[in-house]
Amino acid sequence: MTSGPSTNPHRWPTAITAFDEDQILIRGRNVVDLMGTRDFGAVAFLLLTGRQPTPGESAVWNAIMIASSDHGPTSPSTFAARVIASGNRRAPEAAVGGGILAIGDAHGGAGEEAMVFLQEGLSLARRSGGSLRKAAEEVVWNHKSAGRRMAGLGHRFHVVDPRTDRLWSLSQSFGLSGDGIALMREIATVLSEAVGRPMPVNVDGAIAATLTDMGLAPPIARMVFILGRTAGISAHVLEELAREKPMRFRFGFRYDGPSAEQNFSGKRQETGVAAIVVHDKKDAMS
Ligand SMILES: CC(C)(COP(=O)(O)OP(=O)(O)OC[C@H]1O[C@@H](n2cnc3c(N)ncnc32)[C@H](O)[C@@H]1OP(=O)(O)O)[C@@H](O)C(=O)NCCC(=O)NCCS
Image 1 (cartoon, rainbow, N blue to C red):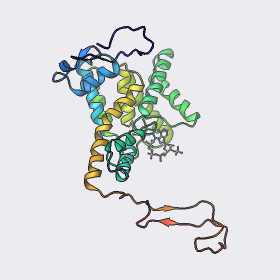
Image 2: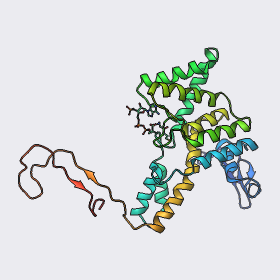
Image 3: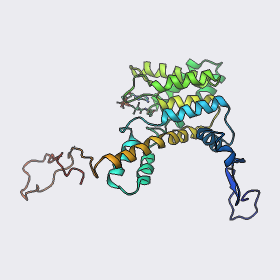
């Protein structure tokens, strides 16, 4: 078994998995015992947190992965994956990996940052006698005065993100909701007032508040999103390869940089205005 303390400096310590010829232990549980008795979500939770989820945590965790699993071909990660698959037809794993690289602070990764400000807000509330509204005002003000957007709030399409309420009511039904979710609701109200239009808690923010109340660490918010979205990205990559022609993406664009000294026909340009070139023909992405 490749486990146990070692004084050999060439063996790095890991608390995740050990194996020998006959068995594989994930966090001390035999993988063959987990197979058929646990769902994938529960094992992902075990891997990431080091402990088995309670039945409620397992249901909520799986719901988080389902909520994250897909949002159509135009989300940055899925779009990136489809573009990569259109150019690299022989390595679908490159497209899936490339899609995951587009996940970050503005898309799918905002939950991590949101968990940090929720934790700050909760400790502010504790220090100032427990007013979540006051803590929300301070957190929003801190962001606004620093000119920063609030992670986990706002959405390009949804005025109300349908995943948020479902996740939070599921959480509540298992007795897992608490001040994290309550504070996020206050923050959404305060931010909407400050911005002057509804600022919904998006899926990243919903996950952040849920995981805060489950007592998990901020980086887990990003990881659980990646786990869920990898399923959707994989489906889109396979569809791209099966249905679409190579290099099918063609976008028009408008050049507005400095003008060339000579135009393409070799004549000097008469004005100082940049040549405007619109590419929307067949070779736009060649
Ligand atoms: C998701 C997001 C890109 C959608 O943006 P959008 O609805 O297209 O809105 P716009 O980018 O046009 O922003 C318009 C104005 O709304 C306000 N606004 C939008 N999102 C905001 C946020 N999260 N916090 C504070 N103000 C915000 C700003 O006043 C912004 O004006 P600005 O461009 O001068 O900063 C945006 O809300 C955002 O950046 N959210 C934070 C990152 C995040 O949670 N990502 C996960 C998405 S699921």
